[in-house]
Image 1 (cartoon, rainbow, N blue to C red):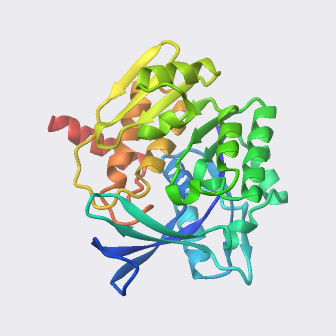
Image 2 (cartoon, helix red, strand yellow):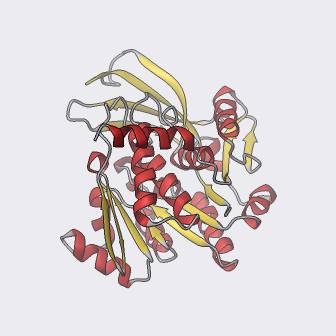
Length: 315
């Protein structure tokens, strides 16, 4: 099987318990949960049986240990996760608003995650990689962007492929140079995985088909548009495949897109038909929202297939 690698932030997530709760006053919190978009992605890919590893950095603290142990338990290669004494593991505090939106308070750039580098361990991991996945959230600093672009260059030089999920949050998009970094990654992308309106950030078109056509003309081989509960649509130069989502009770949406992306890319690397890859990806995205915590809804392939079979039996 092809080996999948990503590089970027590793953090813990601590969540408000009540909808409408504000961080401007004391309130009940739940966590810490292992998190970070590339960590969730690699964890889900590994759980599906895909060889997968992560280049990252954590502090020599309980939060860092929590993340490394979770990834290792899921089967991920953690050899390129650096542990820094004297620096805290990254954090994200999250509140949930009544309109279903979320508000984040991040400490990533100034945490151990900010020490991300292309060290010997990272180079060794990339030497055996066939595919690199880039998260837009992982371009949070010049240093992190350099690592991501170096990973892309290393894998491309060996004939490998690249997937890209813009994964843009308002709090991160304000960073200087973010747009330029996103464009550099997009220029090297084979599989593009935007969510909803992220599709239009990189196109002058005002409708889905126009934006897809414009992006495919740039050299991207396939676009997978995530539509949340409505499922997803796959586009390439031969046409479009749409796949409805699975109906589940949502507990926490955090990490659903990352789990979806990990599943789609894993099965794309295995040569699966778009419809089959979408079905598995939609199931992983649906299962992800059924548990509180970004990585708590990660499931192994046998469980995902059982979920799909049961959904089909009740359709």
